[in-house]
Amino acid sequence: ERFNSYVTLKLQNVKSTTIQVKGSDPSWEQDFLFETMRLDTGLIIEVWNKGMLWDKLLGLHWLPLTKVQHSNKEGKGKWLPLDSELVITNGEVVGTRLATEHRILIDARFELPYGERVRAGVRTEQSSGALPPPPPTPSSPSTLLLHSSATSGTTTALNDLPESEAAELQDKLSVINSMMNQDSMSIKAIR
Image (cartoon, rainbow, N blue to C red; front, top):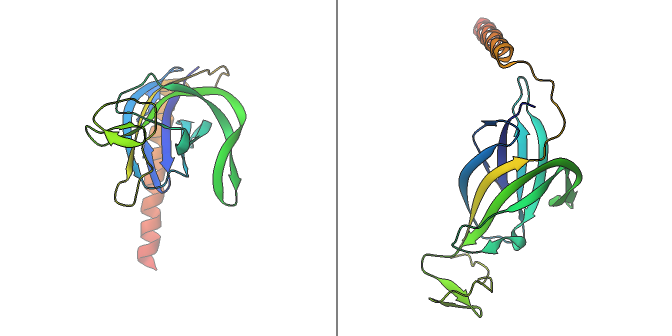
């Protein structure tokens, strides 16, 4: 199987994308930081396979921010199943459905400000890690650190072109697009 996959992360109106990685078990090893004041929403994680003409969604996962741990330490991550559809209620994403054979390993955590830990709901210098910090206030946004490591579980074959043919086709498409853009500009100039 040949994949050229990437991950798109969406939180509220912010979207971040990983680099593309080839192979059936890609590892992105990229960190993303999001700041948010709202913990009543979630992170949409999408895994895509880059195509010649269009990209194919391999799967997605909705991670509610209320399920994200608070820690300043990197964790081992958690394997999340990928589904094929978002579940939307009253215009808000509330989950995903229709499982795929894909999954992704994600280490997501809220980082506390430097040197601060939480103990019994009160900020102290001693770390217990047992209790989450108080929710952010308008003057103290939470930072979500996301580390995307790998995806696996692909079992269906894709009928991709060999790389040499794909590269040749991409070059031809680029030439055609360039010619179409020039024609379009010529027509606009005449009008």
